[in-house]
Length: 389
Image (cartoon, rainbow, N blue to C red; front, side, top):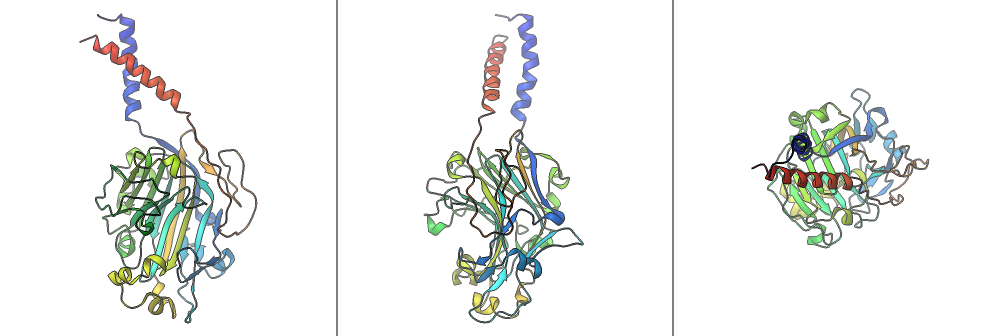
């Protein structure tokens, strides 16, 4: 049977739309920008000794960090500096000052956060991280975009969750999969770990390459993490585009598909965190410390005049947050001047410690009708075309 000319005309008009819909990636629009003189607005300073990872440090308050120039914006570059105290002399049984900051706002499923850095901390005893978590960890999950210790040369990416989340059939560029069970109860809370094969992803190699960009996508289809050395940063990121399409980024370094880890079940809106601790549970154990450093972590490095820590700093050009086009994934927190998805702004407050209010969890099915429409149209078109041959 041959369909009437009008049906064929409809098919001809419909086919390009179907092709473009199938080829298009998910787009995200910018909703938050931490950069320039106001970089440290809407961050919470931990203001406590490290009772979380047992590091030999005190995470100082905002006032101390500012006066001691442990957290400041360089007026010459407009880049944010977050560093370990490298000028004070620390006696035995004391701890060294450093910084841990947490974003007041949280970002839910349907978000991408992109951090442009010129330098990351490294050195014997140094344990830096750029990561995120929900307030009631392990409920709500943790995403470690950037983490390293001592003089290792490669970034380590991982997730930490309640039991039931595993990495299965990832589409990623790294073949270095250390572990696939993300449960905090498995393998002493190792998490599901992927190592970046690039030696430009951490330490001295990162600085020598001019730094780079880390991008984290928290999507209902899975979690993906990219690292781009300075010479390979996509144009959309370099040009500070207001809209990005992650399908143009190429394969991520690490990918955790929702087929093995139900994102809506295991991940809630995330607070973003920069921190630098010393020694602690990861950097200090002799089996790890001796891989790249000599001596004893605390005695030979934390103590003394601090000259060991000249490289123990983040230099951050920007952190930009994007929400899936047509949505707002911000959950506004204390001290925030941004507007959340519910339309409410955070309360006015100054520096606080890490005990922030829990986010409001929500989801949206706004794309269901469009998907159903195009699926139905495809069936119609398939029927039309099948009768022509």
